[in-house]
Image (cartoon, rainbow, N blue to C red; front, side, top):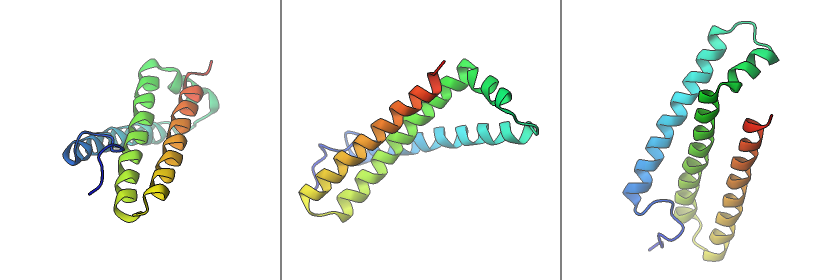
Length: 115
């Protein structure tokens, strides 16, 4: 039996629900970005800059980055616990993945809120 200590949620059902909610958030964000590119034919740096300077877009992008990290962690945790049976290797891989996801999140914040 796998310990739930490294899981994101409290149970498998909780993890499943979190992953589905983050998937919906990411889907809505992708639709938003897709519509932006469809309805703006002549995209330049200034247009992109104005779009991402909107506080609502910044907050939604931040929520999407966080959702991507949470979604990835739950999926990778599930894969690692199912297929990597050697405890120390799994633990090492989980630490590396956590560090990468945290660095992606903080770099995303830096890029998003840079002045």
